[in-house]
Image 1 (cartoon, rainbow, N blue to C red):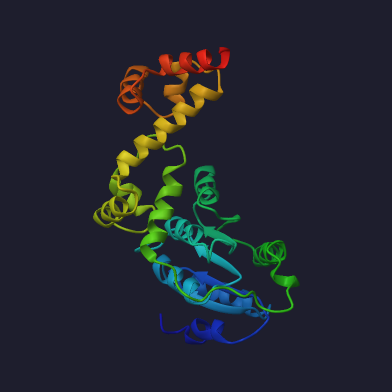
Image 2 (cartoon, helix red, strand yellow):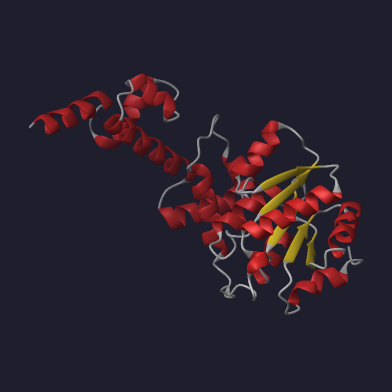
Length: 267
């Protein structure tokens, strides 16, 4: 990996040229991308896995990130979730490069916050065109000087919790295990459990249950959906489990809660 020293340090040079961070564990892919981008005179940094890539982005935020999906330690999806959970880095366009050319792969990439998904093998001209478009959309090519960003690093534990909260706010069917949730934000289950308890006062699954119940309560109040449909929409196995959980949390059944709202409106 030491064959790319110039590119690893390139981003530290003051310049108005767009700075691109490439994150890929394949030396052959890196060489191809470097040769392609070098012709455009971009500033380039390199990382060899998601964890290193996140650290490089935090130390010197790039204007755009080209990132492989399948990498050791922390994969591209988890890295993108962390980037988008960090207020200093969430604005950076992330373009995924992957040999996984399925609708599921692409949808997962967009769900984590990526702006584009480029399938391998790729055409160099197409990648360069997409990079230019996203740099233009982000305003990078029209700035007279580099963006002024905070350089003080954020609390990494806060970023992990924020990434987990964002992921858990999305519909999860079926509900993943704690180990799977931790893996999807680039950490391990013991650390995630400890951080979540410290930051939210709840376990991960207690938090998920609370969010499901709050969502169900809103659906009952704002829609005409049946209790069965609300239970399904909120991610409960069946209406019976939903009713039991709702009564434990709010001291009333879903039907009684909805009726109480109608009584208030009619008064």
